[in-house]
Image (cartoon, rainbow, N blue to C red; front, side, top):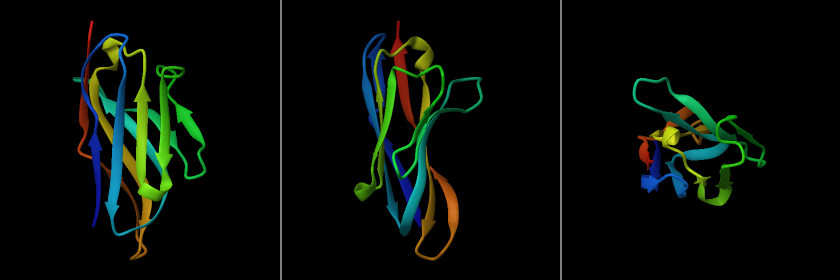
Length: 120
């Protein structure tokens, strides 16, 4: 089985920074794309950023220039550095991974989420 565990969320004032981490573990053969999504109360889950195994990145317009996604392939870990945080960044942040296992299955796995709250 595969598990994704996020960490690094918390409460921060507007203008502050946080760094989220998400470590994937278990019966993993390879991971292609890893990403961060977020869901605010009463809203749909939305894409924040993705990164391929080769380092290619994509960002939501709302976070470009403020957030940076990175990954450590050796550790099966993805990071999200969040700077210049705004109250509208408040949400539950989820990581996901598009991966294949040693058993040959391919699927997208999700973490349980980590709360980010930005006070004004």
